[in-house]
Structures are given as C-alpha cells and as structure tokens.
Amino acid sequence: MNDDMNAYRINKFLSQLSQDEEKTARFLEGDMFLFDNNGLTQEEREAVMFCQATKLFEAGVHPLLMMHLSIILKKDIKELYQKGL
Image 1: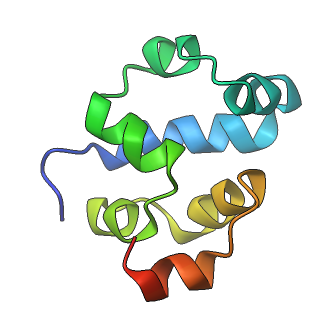
Image 2: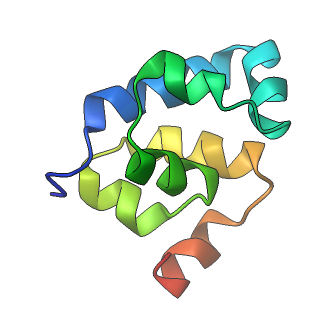
C-alpha cells in the first residue's frame, strides 16, 4: 500500500466524479478546483489525471472506481495494468 496516497480521499473523489456529469465535464476540461476542493495531493492528482492504474491500485483505490475513471478518460484499463501504469 502506498502511504503517500490516501485511498479514502481518492475513492471519494472518484465516486463523486463518476456520479456527477457536471463534475465529469469539469474534470475533462482540466478544472483543478475539483482537486483542490477534495484535498488531493499533487501525487494523487497525477495518478488520477493520468489514470495510473497500478499506482492507484497499490494505494488501495477500489477497482470499480478505477474502471469508471478509465471509462471517463477513454482508456483501456487492461492495457494500463499491462503497461504497469
């Protein structure tokens, strides 16, 4: 488990993101306020923005929420895991 990243905080952020179309649109537009508002660290932001599946998994982020993130970002989650991202 990655001690530098907080799974609860990331899970909460991804849950809200996947359930709110307005937040999803703002996220895709690069609205950094979403991250600020949820208290995500720079490392957590980068892991989410670049859909770093392995890093998120090691931090304890729920796989279903990572799948939602990959769908939002139009990324193939299997490919991300295979590449070790």
